[in-house]
Image 1 (cartoon, rainbow, N blue to C red):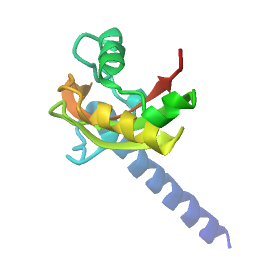
Image 2: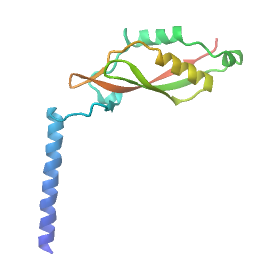
Image 3: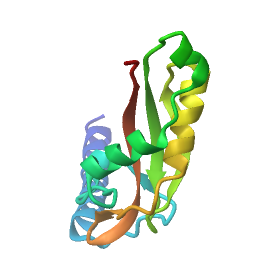
Image 4: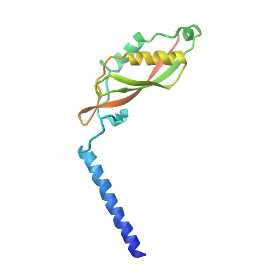
Length: 142
């Protein structure tokens, strides 16, 4: 019985050593990250950046988005959360609605995001990486 406990303890130490070694490789930057990895915004060292920054991005959206006619006529307001990926080359990809307002508002928000110019990609360990990004788009009536 005592031998079994000792054997278990030794295998745990061995497993811990392997996990620790793997963590050290990641810390040292010696681990290869798969090329198709998409990183969350909080995980990258340098976040993706729209040309000109956030102010320019929201200015672009204000100029580009066309308020859906039916929603405007009925004075319907809403907020659409759009998720997309800024690829390693800065192109916007995988655009989808994360939280919906109305089908027409959702479609317009997706159209505007898909038409965005090339971004500066996110960076991790000084290399460009694909990064997931979520922004809210407000539709407000006057």
